[in-house]
Structure formats: structure tokens, C-alpha cells
Length: 342
Ligand SMILES: Cc1cc2nc3c(=O)[nH]c(=O)nc-3n(C[C@H](O)[C@H](O)[C@H](O)COP(=O)(O)O)c2cc1C
Image (tube, rainbow, N blue to C red; front, side, top):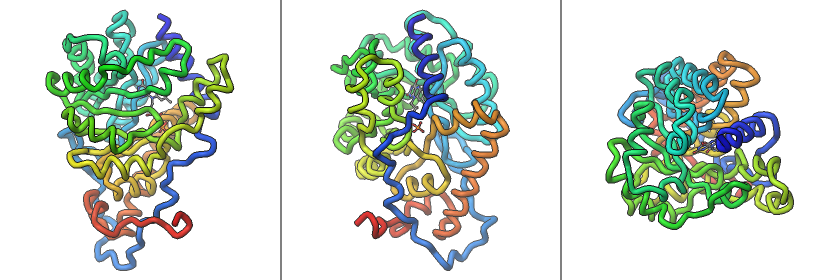
């Protein structure tokens, strides 16, 4: 029950306080999409649809893993699933650790699949839990509970080392991930939670058999920021508020590694940033807190409108770069560093 309390605290702080990075941005502002004055196509023909985890979605976005495992999470995951069904985008549920620890709050995860039977739903577990067992059946149970299309393992060393209840035991995580990749029936996605993934780490992950890497870089939600409202050692947390690899830089680094399928997330908050991330090599984008805040303050309708706006912005950016399909964004010369950053 201690986990449920902590999760609920994280949720309330994230929604109510300003926990964004302070001095560091995503870095997407350092890049420009190169304007194409001769797109040679009709705007209406631009297609934002894409295939992810073998399912077709209306545009390459997932609502990143956030909730599950406490009172109130059932409603939130239900509402997120409803929005994802209506807009046909993917959804990640929050950490399914309670399934290992006390088998509680199962409905808070199951609801997502009940509401969106055909959509993409991704399970979630922490790096430390991956090292704690050799028995893959616990992860199978997480997948089965929501008929998951994939399972994300979150790497959160900063959070574990900062939070009072943290378990900063990361020895053996890579081996554990490798076992999951070899033993589970669905793809394993490895993600950060707001500090980004370096090229070196991406190479290790690829060598362990991982292909989907969600960078969850710096520039959006700061976990040190969230923990700053819970811990006593405020100055220590403040020092790490802006820790991490900016999202754009992380996308650039991980895209260089052969065999990766990059998910760009961490501070993504509009369709033009999505287009930039896709042009830099990502196959998919994710967003967490900016979407959750809109759901809480403006309801399902508000979130649906925002997602439709992001899709329209992405479609316009595609048209204005002469990109008929998502994969066309990845052509040579669609994106360049702008002058102010050189
Ligand atoms: C309230 C909240 C809860 C979160 N819980 C999880 C979690 O359980 N598992 C996980 O992998 N990431 C979790 N995250 C991290 C997000 O999935 C995401 O990687 C991070 O917030 C950066 O994205 P953003 O800048 O769009 O918010 C959580 C984020 C928030 C705000």
C-alpha cells in the first residue's frame, strides 16, 4: 500500500505543481524543418497514419506510461483509453509493479483494454524489478492482464537515487532486459523517464536484443522536480532538477545506432516538435504530463481537441516539407540546425 500512496502523491504533484525543467529545454528549437515552397502534392493527400507494433494508428503518438496501481488510477486510465480509442493513438499504462507486490488495483490497468479492445496498449515495469526475479511468468501476467502489444521497462536511476523509498540497485538490469527480450511473447521497449538515453547505452541495449528505445529525454517533466516536493534534502534535489540529455540530442544519438526504432519523448508538446523528432529518425513520439494536465483540467473533450491540433500541426509540417507520408520526413535534408544554435 506504500507504493499506492507514493504513486498517488507523484500524480498529484505532477498535475498541480510546475515540475518542468527550468534551465534546460528539449533542444528542438535548435533545429528547423526546411521549408519546401514546391510540395507538389495536395494537403488533403498528406497521410499521418503509421504502423506501430503491428497496428495502424492515425498518427505516430502514444500517451506515455503514467498511471495505475492506486485509487483513482482506474478513472484516469479509463479516460486516457477512451481518448486513445477515439483518436486512434497508443497508450502506455503506468508501472505494473503492484501486480508483483500485492496483486492489487488490477482493474486500474485492465480498464484500458476493456475500453479500447483493439488499440495499442503497452505494459510497464521498472528496471529494478527486472533484476529481482528470474521468473518471466510475472511479466507474462502483466502482459496478459491488459493483452499488451508490448511491455516497457523504465530506466529511472535518478528517480531511484533521489526518492526516499528508492532502490538504486541497477546491477543486473541489462541481463534482466535481455532475458525478457528472449523470453516474452511481445516486444520489449526500453524507456527513460525524463533524463534521456545516450548512444552508448543504446548500443548496449541493441546488443541485448532491444530495438524499441524511448529516449524520454530532458526538457519536459523533471522527476527531480516532482521529488523536490516530497523529500527533505531539498538542495540535493535542486542540484539535479535539470539533469539529463535533452530530448532532441538523445533522439539524434540513439537514431545513429543501427537496429534501433526510436520513440521520441520528453517535453514533446506540439505537432511541429513531433515532425522534427520524426525527421531526426524517430518512428514514434510520446507525451505524458502535458496531456495528463489537459485531461485533468479540461476533461476528455479538451484532450481530444489538443490531440487533433497536434495531428493538424504535424500534417501541416509534413505538407510544408513536401512529405506525403511519415517516412518521407526522414529523407535527407528535411531538417537542419538553425543559425542561432551554430
Ligand atoms: C505522474 C507521472 C507518472 C509517471 N509514471 C511512470 C511510470 O509508471 N512508468 C514510466 O515508465 N514512466 C512514468 N512516467 C514518466 C513518463 O512516462 C515520461 O517518460 C516523462 O514524464 C517524460 O515525458 P513528458 O515530458 O511528456 O512528461 C510518469 C510521469 C508522470 C508525470
